[in-house]
Image 1: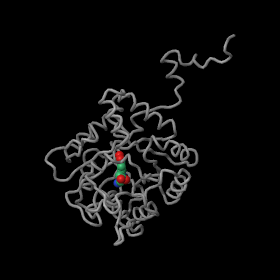
Image 2 (image 1 turned 90 degrees about the horizontal axis):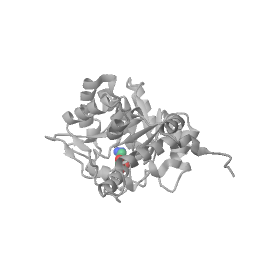
Image 3 (image 1 turned 180 degrees about the horizontal axis):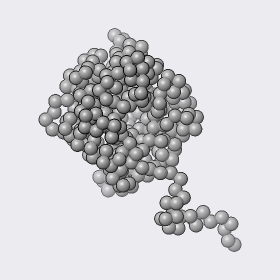
Image 4 (image 1 turned 180 degrees about the vertical axis):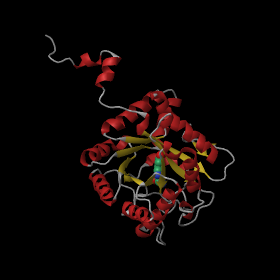
Length: 325
Ligand code: PBG
């Protein structure tokens, strides 16, 4: 007999498939993470992240221009300071590498390119933790969020339109919102890394920012445990109450359930971070000829959108934006 329903009818041609596509992926939904290093004569390729560099100020501007031309949603900066100390003071120093880079980008692009800054201390501390470490090796939550507040104000003053607290300290969003408002930066957006898991997928990133971790070698006492799902909703709700404008889930592919929960339960924009390990795995398999790298990248990023992310931080931003345009 004849099938009563023929869903294949709508898949017959690419025109039909395009017409009924439920999910879109556009350059404006992509945010490119970029690394800028202090005092380098030339950009250094990051071997664990093919195609990504530890930039000089000049090469950062060139890359930012390329991304702006491709109409990406924005860029987010990570810094490699020339000197580190116990509190990570370069993170809020007016002449710290991130603040210098932010001013340079503001001068070059103004409001034409959305520039964000990661707000966390791990790249700036000599012990590699995301906060102030006590004598017993644990991270002091309340002291740390005061430093995040200083860092966020320094970033806003230097021109960051968006700050992205990623340290997973309790109360960090509230402390930053209050400090920004009191310093005259009530319009600075907070994109909170709300549901950030302690993930083995950050491996290549730590090479990219030259961070080795001591004191137990992991961040499990502040980043989330990957056995948990409900906890992410609790974290994200608290961040919204404290003033987060955008909430983020990180990593992406292994946490699509969490992306979907946040999209359904909250009414703020939801971001997902397709992290260094996710990028590196695709490149590694593609290099061996086992998968079609660009095709897998498109499939994964579209899946993150389908799960409910409004925007995606991804090292594929430049390549995918070019493919899409
Ligand atoms: C912390 C931070 C990390 C990443 C972004 N912000 C590293 C960590 O938490 O250990 C990882 C990003 C990636 O893996 O692509 N400042």
